[in-house]
Image (cartoon, rainbow, N blue to C red; front, side, top):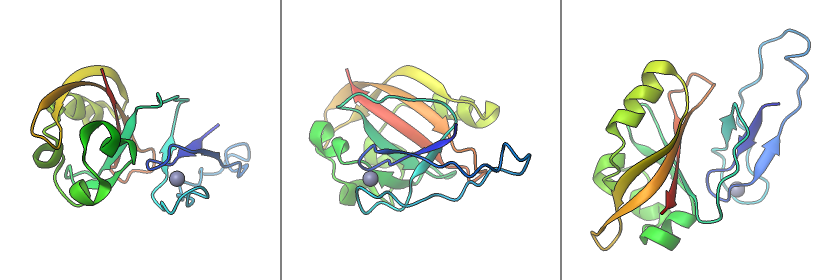
Length: 148
Ligand SMILES: [Zn+2]
């Protein structure tokens, strides 16, 4: 069953429209999160259970950061205001070039990539990263980063 993940507070929200059982096109409209103010919930094709420390970042097709979850500040010192609107590589220095190229080429998720990123102090840290392309053809990708 498709569901939407809030990239800010990680709340899951299932939407049962019945469209698919009727043979209709599934509705990809992103519902707002009812736990926080985020209106950029992310449709997930598969079940995914992030760790408590996992931070979500949503990027668009040009690697611009659209949403950054609250956990990013907890382990990297980077608030949403610091990074949203900026480029993924400039703001986080996440070594995700190959993973993102694979995700875009195959329109498929990539899991458990051991990568590096840069925290607010300019220190390179190792993270596990998972990548999920949006099923709605927007080109958005949900990136889940978890400190090692
Ligand atoms: Zn939320």
